[in-house]
Length: 182
Image (cartoon, one colour):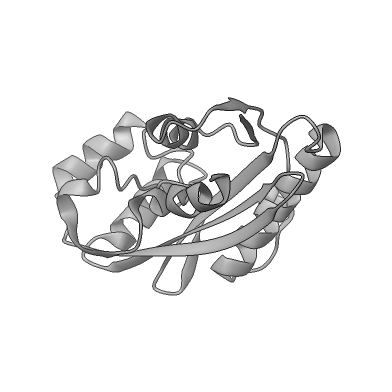
């Protein structure tokens, strides 16, 4: 059993799909305080901040702690969670017919081991259909997602190529996590 230090439903679904027992406790770390424009620096600082908050609250004596954060990068721009639907539309349109990097950092700590991992999955998307994009934005599914995208949802039919793990793009590199859980 591990403690998932995240409120993400997608991360919870990933752990369930891989038969990893967990309880879920999100935190309240303020990512807006992070000023770096560099995607890998940002995702590391956000994950470390969340980890520190939850480690101070729960520790790892009763169970290991797992914390993660994800960002998207396109055209050299750091794309975080959309502030509103206009921001989401801007980000999703930027990714249409373009190369996109989805970067996830995770920190796992038990009594015996600590893993800090930054993984990237790179996608090349075909051009998004305008009507499908409008429906996606209007549905609100894009909100709360790094870069306002869902590779397992809206973006899936537009994937031209992928390099890396889909789980990384969904917010948690389960393949690497499972290696330390053995």
